[in-house]
Length: 436
Image (cartoon, rainbow, N blue to C red; front, side):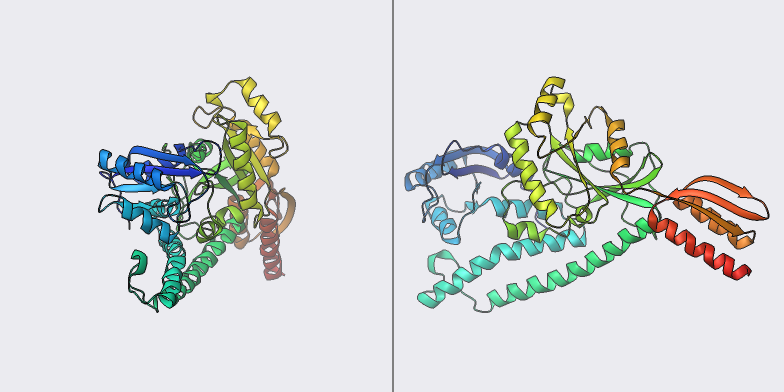
């Protein structure tokens, strides 16, 4: 696993085709990886095929690196293998050059604690490396010099090795996904509704999770849900949640499992999103998705993030999506209403809350209850036997019991998810058959 770079000094660089380069996010990402950002270089121009930046700007970059004694240059752009090599040749010896995607993979590597997370990081690394291996193969065919352009000695088997490793990791991830899907179905059959928190990094998802479930103990039943976690970190840094954290909450009459997932991030290539789709399975397979956004950001920023989030979620998700405008403690009511109106087409009827201050959490809970699949009502008449008492106890554990009448027979009335109603009917049928 990648170690944090607590002493590494980094200079960030960014090129844009037009407008002004914003380096706030790349600085946050660099700090999240443990780098000390000591300088920056930006440029507005078309991409230079050889250096990405113009040659003059690369010289300024080199001077900044030398002056600040930096050990790493981090580009908020995607660099080709040749550009990475060319830029590195212009910098002081020993300075590492990485692009945005290499940095993100490094952050994920630092956060990966489960086997699934580690596999996804490895998959992303291999997908990042594959085009570079292909570039070496292409050069080897045209030029017989080993290590041409600093890309390293060409190993003709490396490209095939990467493809085989990718296939093997996909197989293992698919097996893990099947196990997790089975667990989700067990949870549903046990009477739980599944709610997923989605959104961009630092939107406040972990804080909101703690607020929704803060007063409730998690049932550590290893057979039922072995990955439940009683704690969810709430830190002001990116990618705190690489894996998923699930906690139990009561919403109205319902027992709900709320899962906090990895935060989205802007401008990720499809191959990188695809590498981490296993982490998003808890979103895709949920009964309801809460899409959390930071209402203190500009309308333009929120709109862009909502569009990207919808593109990611609607690709495979069938559950309803409720937008949550979080961090209302940072803005006044007038600004919240103005943004609510401006975003109404992308986020109809959102819920405005402050996870930090606990404002409007009850309204959010009510909305969750309204949006989840309707409960069904059922009335069962059971024979008075010892076995019946265990079925009545099971119904109490998995449904909302309204009335039980113990006479010559047991009459129980309750509300529950359709799957629970179906199971209770099956159990009742077995009891009746056994007593006939």
